[in-house]
Length: 230
Image (tube, rainbow, N blue to C red; front, top):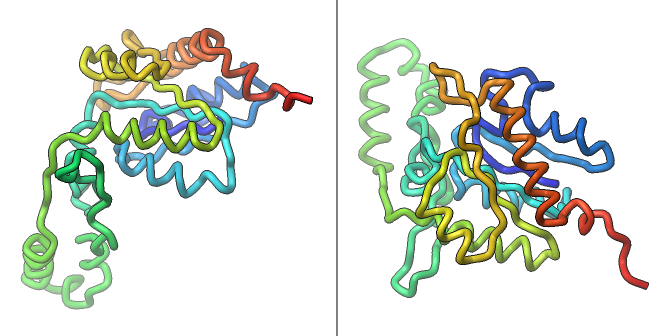
């Protein structure tokens, strides 16, 4: 089982043993559960990461955790945390095209590699200004649902199942998932830290329980380990 997401999946503000992926391992000792959460990632980078990891992991179940706080914004931009990232733009025929590769060197790395920037404020200012002009920020129409389409198609083509967990109730996304018959659950009511808006240990416990209910409802725990037919 491969779990994709951002800092909520990575486990920001909680200990390893308090993360929902670790709690799932305790509940499902017969399953290999890989936490592939990366802070700051949106659905676009999670899709690319999934494809990169697939040959090594070959999961039977992929769980995409959607963060309502910022995923739509991340999917619509080529910059996150002041660093450039790949992004997907919608073409005239409605399909998505990967853009922004190779990814430009980030501002922080450019400053770190420059002796002048380390010693002169004006040099740091000049390098920062150059990066902003040379590698402009781009915003595209929100491709979120199309990214989930890409992920679902890839997962199904590899004989696996895609499940989705949504941080909050979100009618637009839920309507799409329902229409596409992609099983999902929401984590509405999951306790969060006031300062960071990440799940507390209690919030991670709720996420665990909701996912277990989803697994049972969809039957993926059986299909993931069922022997091939004779």
